[in-house]
Every structure is written in structure tokens, then in C-alpha cells.
Length: 289
Image (cartoon, rainbow, N blue to C red):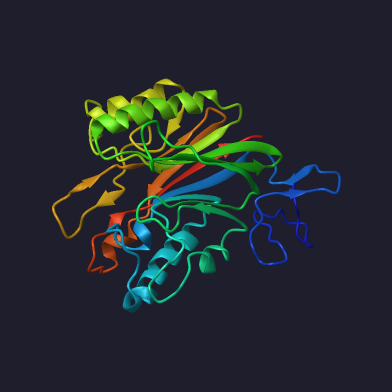
């Protein structure tokens, strides 16, 4: 069932009274009337590096406006339905700006955890209702996580999972196996996203491709990075010698069909003095509840 304007034209976007685009509209009987058919979901994964350069610091006061325009613009322009972040800080800058002050203008549902730590804050932002947050920590780890929350998408519960894998190939192999076992245990459709630190994934012979990415593909899941949609560079050290890599990914359960994948690389042309660090990965997928 479609939604129409007063001239009888089918609406492609519907807004609430607060001006935010609505992900779904229901009749008084609870029947979904918008959108009609499969739902197109845009999902963004972003290691925001403390909103700065990934150095364990957040934005200096004198760079507050520059980085606000960069980070707010990156998220607002892409307009994701779901955003999952790593290295999230509750405080945006030393000028006192908070992350919630602008995220709340873009998303009605937000849940963050660990946002006062240097590298292990994480955050879920959604245009769909969120509930049931659970923190999971990898075996033998005190900070590496695979946290979950439930998004209700047109009446269907979908598990959102955000993770941040370790810095060594051995750690990532062990953690990826634990993560895969967890994903296979879920009773709902899922979207998993995170900084997988898959530095050794440039080819299908790379250890991270073999240990982390291929098992997800073999399990029947769709990967946005280093799969059928190609390899996407999501990290660049633009001032040092750490190179670049396809470190970030978004993984969908079989109920979703990926239709497009991209990276917002505006950091590379934004005249930053600091390293670009991570850039957001965006995947659009169709989902029929």
C-alpha cells in the first residue's frame, strides 16, 4: 500500500511532524502502509577515531568547527537508516561540543556504550526503534567487544551487532571464530558491522581474508567489503607510513540483499593536517520483513 500527497502522487519519502524522514508508516490497525514492498536500508559503519584522527584524543578546541562540518556533513549527507560506530566518544571536542548534540538531530534512536574510553566506545544510531542492548566481550579480552541491540524494522526484530577486532592476525582469527559462532546462534535476521582490522585482505590469499572474511561468506552471509562488491579502502594513513587497508565491513544475514556499496572518502580532499584514519563504509540492502 502506498502513501500519496494531496495531488495523488505516490510519495517516495514521508516526514514526521519533527521534520525527520520516517522509515515506515502504519495504519491505525498496525498495517505497514509505507514503504510498499521490500524496505531499502542504508547502513553506515564508521570508526570515527574519537571524531578526530584515531590517536586516542578527540578534536582540539581550535579545530571544533572544521571537524564538526566534516563529521556531521559525512553522516548527514549519506543519511543512513542505521549507523554503527567504533572508537566513539560522547564528547566531540575539547570545546565542549557533544556527539549527541548533532546525532540526535539525525536519528531518533541512539544507544552508546564506553564513550569515555580512548578506543573502545561504540554507538548505535537508528531511524528504527532500538531495545535490548547487550554487551559481549571476546574470550580472554577485557575490551574487545561484539555488542548487540535489537532494531524493530516494520514489525520484524533485527539484531544489530557492532564489533572491533584485535590488532594481530592471531587475535583476529580467534575472535572471528567466536563472532561467527555467535552470529550462527541468532534467531533473528542480523546486520553486523565494525572495524575488523583486516589488514591482510588485499587478496584472497591474505590471512585475514582466509580467517575472517571467507568464513562469513562460506556461512551464507553477504559482506560489503572484500566480497562480490569488490575491495574498498576504508583506512588511509595520509601523513605517516602505515599505508592503507580494507579494515571495515558490514555483514548481512541471508534475509538481506546488498544492492550497492561505497566509501565516503571526503577526508582525502578536505585539506586535513592530520591523518585521514578511517572512512565510513556504506551499504544499501533490500529487506522484506
